[in-house]
Amino acid sequence: MDIRFVPLSDFDKGFLNLRSDCENCFGLCCVALYFSASEGFPSDKNAGQPCLNLQPEFRCCVHENLMERGLKGCLAFDCFGAGQKISQASYGGHDWLKAPESAKQMFEVFLTMRQLHELLWYLTEALTRQPARSIHAALSTMLDETERLTQLSPDFLIELDVAVHRAKVNTLLIKTSDFVRAEARRSQKVHSRRQKTFSRGSDLIGADLRKIDLRGENLRGAYLIAADLRGTDLSGADLIGADFRDTDLCGTNLCNSLFLTQGQLNAAKGNASTKLPTSLTRPTHWDRD
Image (cartoon, rainbow, N blue to C red; front, side, top):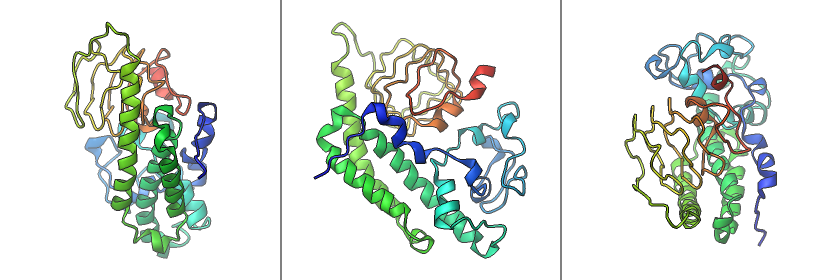
């Protein structure tokens, strides 16, 4: 069996098609999604209704000033490359303005594709993790299966039960997390004392976590809104689904954290001393904070 281990030196290559490319998208995130002004979007709007800032050429007229306008919901959203996949592959470059009869279906398919691409992101990262090498074959098979689903026609994608597939993927991601976090804990210095253990969905809103050893910690789905993580080391920490809105990551080491996404970084605060994985980009608004 072909076991696809993705070396860290090729990390960026594996994520090439999983990064947003707005130039090749029909502004789907600005139309397909439900918006709430209270969650950092321009205004309340229903799914399928274009954002008031979306231009006819599918560009956002305030994109360069999202932070100044307090539009943190827009900053934090990441489609993982689903937008251009739908626009250019699934619908062959035919946009919803010129083909309004396809609009409703296209928006619904976008929601499905976005979930599949998110899973591709996590599976691709999992294949870079040496501690999880015993399940790389299963991860590789699941990656191929997920990619195959993204290539289905819109008619099939609209009927796809993503929740069922996500559950299968999540089983492997949890195993990956167990392996990676165990290795991170083993590599800690003998005198290091773990002061606390967290569980999925922990409420850490506004918490000062600077004195807690977070290496190899389970922070899946944790509410880290406005938490203070300055100078901490999150090596091996599982961050899947963690809420990083206004989390202070100045000087934080995120190089070897697990399942971190660009959207999480965009929602957080950081600076030049924040250490990031090579797959992610330092948000431009960090330099203006």
